[in-house]
Length: 227
Image (cartoon, rainbow, N blue to C red; front, side):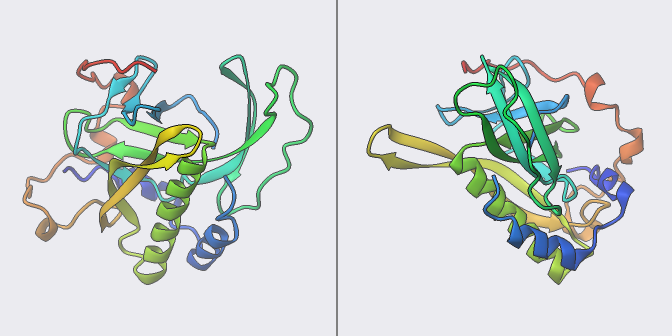
């Protein structure tokens, strides 16, 4: 894994006590789709990214940007968002206002999300955003957010969670087997990436500023997953 998580340090660490308090206060809140590449967990339990639903490499590791957790509301209409109101998770849940024109019958839906960066495997360097409104997504993001907040409260020198993308399932009385996303914690590292003694790759990898921007990274094409 390369030391590519240092870009997270640009804004400086947030107030730790405030962040922990905010995560706990807003843990029942369910982030908006953005212009970033979107990470998705579909109904078949496949992790994919991008408009072509490229499959995520199994076992790849991802660094979670601890500043990126957000919550708010999104409204959908005919398969596309028609409105969204989002703020940082450290702020109170916003008032979305009237339901936007063209929204489906669900109206505003509460949503959570955060940003990740792949740090191992064939998608290394790819930055994505995961955001969703489902209860499974809500619980997974909530669990991860609280875990990170508690880690920062204990040790501010290692605020970046390295995770793998996993899944779980349960039996629903009406819908049968339902799959839910799981963000499996591997370890915590500092903003500059893992220390030399923490990794077998002591090869002085490039700094984030030297890494080709996500939009220019050539991602290997893999099997597309139907969504």
